[in-house]
Amino acid sequence: MAASVRATGWGWRHSGRRAWGVHDLNLSIEPGERVLLLGASGSGKSTLVAALAGVLGSDEGEQAGDLRVDGLRPHDAFGRTGLVLQDPDSQVVLGRVGDDVAFGCENLGVPRGVIWQRVSEALEDVGLDLPLDRSTSDLSGGQKQRLALAGVLAMRPGLLLLDEPTANLDPAGVAEVRDAVARTLDGSGATLIVIEHRVEVWRDLVDRVIILDATGGLLADGPVDRVLATRGGELAGAGVWVPEYPPVARTRTSSESGGVLGTRHLVVSRVRGSAVAAVPDLSVRAGGLTALTGPNGSGKSTLALTLGGLLRPESGAVIAEPGLAIGLDPAPASWKSRQLVARIGSVFQDPEHQFLAATVWDELAVGPRALRSRPSETKRTVDELLGRLGLDRLALANPFTLSGGEKRRLSVGTALATNAPVLILDEPTFGQDSRTWAEIVDLLSVRLDEGTAIAAVSHDGAFLDALATEVVALGVDDVAAARS
Image (cartoon, rainbow, N blue to C red; front, side):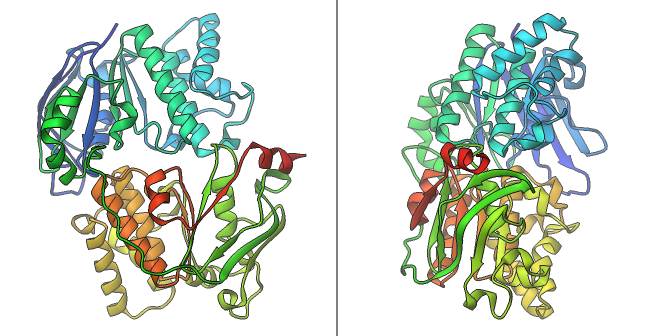
């Protein structure tokens, strides 16, 4: 049975923050409605769906107003909501694929025979064709995202809450997940609230769009086509990805030159003895962006960590040219941390995995301080990045309290802060509204013009169109070759 949602003057702010992340929110969602929730990065979209799922604790912040699911406070509506978070790692509970998908059903007391039928159906729906005993720790980020969605779909919730469920998926995966959600809704009639910056992914599936105003309350609410037709320009100016108003990226003014970092007969692995993929020989060139593409599970993120000197090759080699190594061994994995941070800046697939400091300001200062930059130079660098990345109002916030898009911008900023000659970026535009996306593209475009060499894992076609000078596609054949 579909669930209803009511918000009356509702607001939330994290502990230690002066400003409300969401405030004065009034809305009503009827059972069975399909809602696309939009808004600028940091406008409170993820906070709202987390609150509806009943997972915001009183020790995490302060609440105002009233929020209800089926007339109940969200934490009392146990079993009525299913939430897929931005970070799929945070939702992996058990060590095997089948057990993880079954976990939610078991907590709801679903009969054992029914549980395993639902598990098989949910895995098929999301296109995750894996043995039930496959280790969840072996999955890629995109595969974990599908796993999290499968676990929620198996629960048959009355309110389905999806926080950017396709952000780390390849194009085929986006279509599979969207179609899986459509089939679930058609079969159950559940209410849907989905957060997604890219309107076109869900436009034909939803019947209503709600847009949060970054300054509080609602910016817009109504049928998707009507809202976009009448207020498209205004919404695009506020950072909403309106298909008819694409963001304009800075035009590059220079071209790539010689190779800086390359590979030879490279096979990559997360754990020694367990190869992930064999990689075509590649060269990351000064002033060029080498795009690393391919389906989920093809080894892109493992390759990025290996190129960045953070994992040792299973076999073959990553080779830094003399101008980058500057007297060191040509293998980046052999370099000490200070030697590495001066030469290669990395952005991980999960930004939380690289945060070290207690405040956003100090996080951006980690690299410059490690390189013993002058305090005045560190301050200039950090303050400039805070402003360019739209994080200045969050300078004293804990990095772990930021929204998904804000965390991604912070992680990109930490890589830029050291002015390293090589950048290895894993999904650098994840979770961005159109304005913050354009700012990241502009910052990277300037670095390319200055001669920085960049390799980037990305499924973002607009990003690749704007900056990529070469595309290296990994595939299932590369995985099979590594494991043979």
